[in-house]
Amino acid sequence: MPSRPGATSPLASGGLLAVLAAVSFGVSTPLIQAIGRGSGPFPTATLLYAGAAAASFGTGAGSAKGREAPVRGRDIGRLLVVALVGAVFAPVCLAWGLQRTSASGASLLLNFEAVFTVLLAWRLYHEPIAGRAGVALATMVAGGLCLFLGGQPGGRMGWGAIAVILATLGWALDNTLTRPLADLNPTQVVRWKAALGAAFGLATSLLLRETFPGTAAACGLLAIGATGYGLSLRLYLLAQRRIGAGRTGSIFALAPFVGAAAAWVMGDRTAGPATGAAAALFGLGVYLHLTERHEHTHTHEPLEHEHAHRHDDGHHDHRHVPQVDGEHSHPHRHDDRTHDHPHAPDAHHRHGHS
Image (tube, rainbow, N blue to C red; front, side):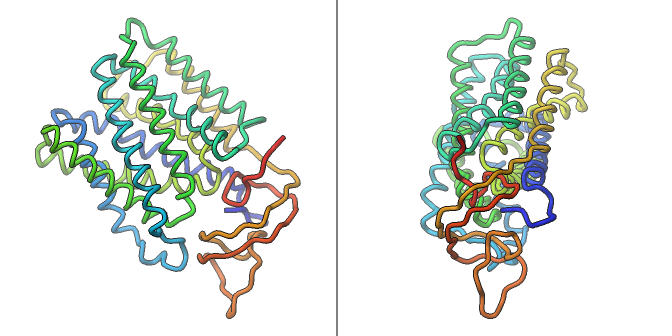
């Protein structure tokens, strides 16, 4: 949403949400590895998505009625595509690739997700990546190269690596296609996406006759799914709403490093100098994103849409009888307007840049 006068920068607040999403997701990775041993990849995914869907029923979606734009029938098609790309295609590519390359090599290659997300957001939504955002992306790419060149001795590459890269492309496409859904009720989006992902995963698990874990492990995976997938996706959507798909995806690249730190706490001591250098570069990239300030004279074209908004943000001055205070949602129209203020690539600021 646009920023209100005197409010925190939308780039800073959205960046913080993306960081929290990355932390929530990153911590889940070593936990899944530890708890999910002996379980097939599709049953594991099914339980994670089921946990995310179940958690969405306890997050007060009813209280958001009238305040958030609901998921409607016209959104189901996009949700189906997102679930197929992010919950079927990408995990299958990753599982296939893990059988044909080293685990460390595959984890390093997952950093391509951030790069693909930024490039897809630039191509599909014309989100600018020049200036400070461009430097941030460059530092993160350099961090990925540090990991790849300094942490891959003797790793088996080839078709397995290509499959892992295709998985990151699938997740990046998932991130980008989810962008229009970020302006809707995040609890409903999480519920639909997680439920569809769990359904697809369960059907594939039964088709392939994969092994499900025991009761204790299954409960653990459900709990991890509720936080590492459900909560993380909710925070990710709220970040996308404020700063767009590209910046959110770039900051979310912190997740592998959070996972590495959690693994170190759990006893993994494989991190080396390349990991430290990459972490520093990724930290610099996140700092550049969080401290970015984007301001210039811009023109809003006439627009009609529905999303959560308030009337003191400088963009929503339509009338209500009686007057409505605070955040609420309904279909509304914007007339053309030219002004100058700090902004991010949200639903109101998708203008081009020379």
